[in-house]
Every structure is written in structure tokens, then in C-alpha cells.
Length: 181
Image 1 (cartoon, rainbow, N blue to C red):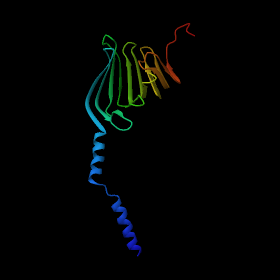
Image 2: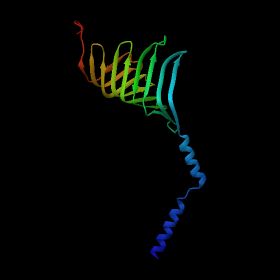
Image 3: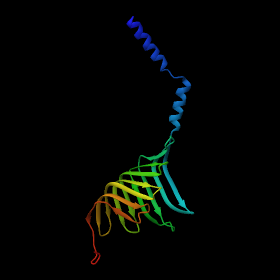
Image 4: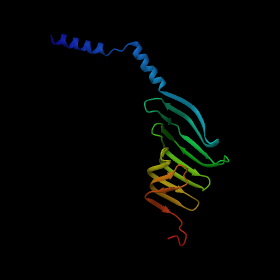
């Protein structure tokens, strides 16, 4: 009797787990349509008819899910331009992800920003761009190198155009002009 009961229970559980071919096809279609893959990405962003940024990447995944996002698994490069189309800066990273609804972009792994006009370079392992506050932040180790200084610290905050920035918990060597203190 216990064997018969166990057999019937197993049979009921097994039969109740079966999906119809239509249900299986719908799940497969949803998963296939959830991701778009784009190779050799080259996008220009403009503002008031002026090109401001050129984004290039070897590969882009666009996830069309409840909380959509873009992923750059093989890295990203951004060129920033002034109104005369002169490059004012570059930003590269080995990985990036953009959360569309949150309007945040996270750049990770060997993040390097270069300011062509000021000849400055920032190196870190992570930067977060918040499009709503127009701020770029990091709580990771950062290093800023100029012609005369090398500043390091833990944490960073800047305007989105990197025109003004501050390093939190600063260390390093820097030049101070006489009479500045």
C-alpha cells in the first residue's frame, strides 16, 4: 500500500509539472527578444545641433526587460567635443552598464578619463554618472595626474563635464604657491 501511494503521488506531481508546447514557445520567444546585441557600436550624441559625444564600443547588449538597461561587456570609449568639434576629453573603461530608468551609468575596470584642455588624467576602478544630478562620483581609489601634480584619494565627485572636481580623503604630492594659505 505505501508503494502504491508513493507511485500515485509521484505520478501526480510529475504530470502537474508538464507545460504545453505553446507555453514553452512563449517562454523561449520572451527570452530571445529580451536582449538585442549590437556589434561595432558608433553613436553620436548632439545638443542643439552640435555634436557633444561620440560613443564607440565593440559590443552592446540592450536588455528589454522590466527594468531596461544597456551593457557594454567589452568596454566603452567616449570622446567629448566642444562646439568647434575639438576633442576636449576622453573616457574609457573595460566595462559599462547604463540603467535607463534610474538614469545612471556605471563604468568599471580600468576607468581612465583624460581632459585634453587641462592635460589631466583620472584613473580609477569605478565611476558612476548620475544623469539626474549631473554628477560623477566614485567611492573607490582615484588618482589624478597633471603636469605638476599627482593626487590620490579614496572617493571622487565631479560635475558631469569634469570642469570642477574634488577628491575625498586626499593624499599625494601637489604644488602650493606662496601666499595661498
